[in-house]
Image (tube, rainbow, N blue to C red; front, side):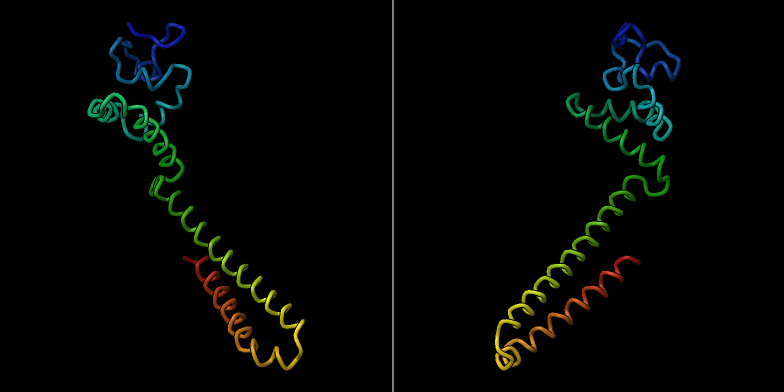
Length: 154
């Protein structure tokens, strides 16, 4: 009989109230000291399905598969409709918004640098060479700000 540390059955066999054998597919991945890990995977996927999945995989890939199942099961409990796809989508949205904020900040820095540079020149020089480009830069910042606000609603 294969028991986990301390002579107790694995979390799976304990939850399912069955004898933990030496060839228990769950024992290496669901130790008795972490019963919640198997309980949540069992709740979302079912012990039979998890067993079938693990048996179809090469032994060296089973640990990663269990980690993925635990992650997805936790995500499904938090968000039953979208699971981890919802979390990924949320994070991608956040990255998009932060990229937009960064672009706006960079454009504002460029505007300030151009204004400071123009302040060092004579009035005639500044008006002729950079007046239009400064206005264009300020317009771009305004457009990016509008896009940023728009992306908050998507």
